[in-house]
Image (cartoon, rainbow, N blue to C red; front, side, top):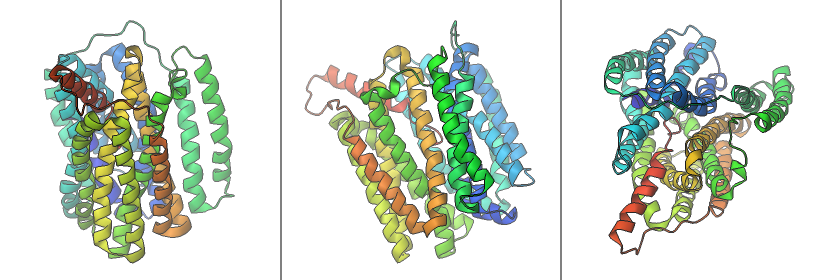
Amino acid sequence: MGVFVAAWPSVILIAVLPEIAGQMHTSESTLSWVVTLPMLAGSVLLPTFGKLGDLRGHRKVFLAGLGACGVTALATACAWNVGSLILLRTVSQVAGVATMPTAIALLMDAFTLDERPRALARWAFVTAVAPAMGLFFGGPLVGAVGWRGVFVIQGVIALACWPFARSWLKETPLAESVSFDVLGGLALMVTSGSVLLFFDRGSALGWTEPIVVAAAVMAPIGAYAFLRIERRTDSPLLPPGLMRRRAFAAPVTAELLCQISSTGVYFSAPHFLTQTFGTSVTETALLMVPLPVGMSVGALVGGRLTARIGERTCGMLGATAMAISMGMFLFGARVEIMGVTIAALAVQGAANGLVRPPMASAAGASLDPEHFGVGMATSRMIGQLGSAVGISMAVTAEALGGFSATYTAALVVAVGAIVLMTRVVPRPGIAGRRDPEEHRRLVEEIDTDAALSLPVLEG
């Protein structure tokens, strides 16, 4: 319930951005930071919340995140201008992100090794189905009471769930020594934020504006500072040498490109439907439902398909389906036929769900047991950064060449993901294996690897 409450409003928020922009008399480009900044801050803080749970107890961090998410969601409903909306939404979503790594740790502690795959699969299903529920119920809700009602409902449910979480959850064992790479996290946020700000404001204001030039200068400085800090700290945000391992870097980078492509198109789809076909907020939200539904189905199929044909083959299928969906979006924008766009949303959702389990399983299999937690947190962080980059790409491409430019850029990135999938280290599937015990072990191993890294917000 805690993960569901933190996740479901993020999707409907994208669908109502045009309405919020009109009410607050600002551009959709500026308002895109209501989605982008929480993604950026949350992705960087994911490993920190995990380490904080190791140090102070995952139950405490989960309860603090859920409670703060509820309170700040209610405050977000009272936002008086675009600046307050961006700030309050970021704080609320970052608090909600604290439920993600702590939920995994609590499940791992509560269930035995044999019970974990099924429990984690249910958790992963909730993370995938939450966006669909948000669209299905959020659209009519926004149409009836306005976008502020979304945050009121989120806050009320979060605070109503809090006493049950406090009563039912048991604390996890504490780690003896955990340290934080605070400076590294800040440097990464400055670097990533500067890159996003450069493209976002450059397309809206012009590439010679002082704030755009400042962002261009700060990005390489931040990157240099981050690398220096990571080399010297005792607890780097990214484990040393992790991204130099092909077995880890290939699936993580391939999924990064998939996230850039899919999130960019997903972000632009409500704008395309509203501007091209004149749909209302409720109609737009309902028309978007095939995407998260497709993702839910794709995620369930992807886990079992990965077990049968291996991570690289399943990942190739998912990335190819992603590229096909981008081609469908591009065709739909050219002919302006709504049915083509809706079909593309369904294909994209299925592709997104299909590609996650094999990439998560491949990344998890490449990690040593002592690095599994931080390695998977790093994988999720990189994926969420890809989501933020995808939104910035969509805003910039749309400003330069319209929706066709957005879909063309997404298609190129998706093709790049297919190429990277060929670099994933193959692990044989279970097809043809006749030993029942080996069959069961491999299925549980791949299911667990996949479920542990399916993120809440990237859907």
